[in-house]
Length: 95
Image 1 (cartoon, one colour):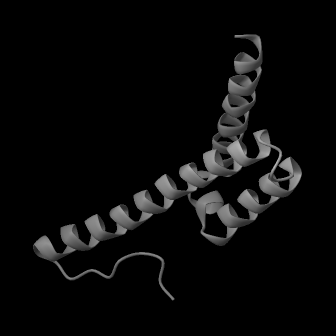
Image 2 (spheres, rainbow, N blue to C red):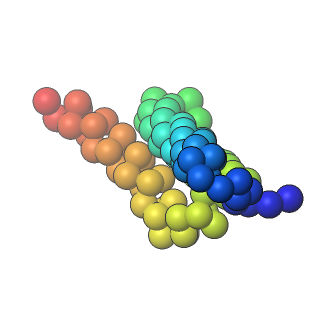
């Protein structure tokens, strides 16, 4: 199974690349959303933090996000969601 669009020449190549990018971007956007969603559930005590992080990492591997962006970038996406969720929780307790 190929991981890149097949070449057809001319404007068709551009359209195939655009479809490739659109799906990749949609996948990344959804991954961000799920990181934030699970971080919020962890903050509310509904999901175990380690289980959420492990699942997000497994999802990133399964959907080739780790391969495409690298481990550091995926870890940063997860960390950002959980750090901001923790900060928001702390801030609401102080305010």
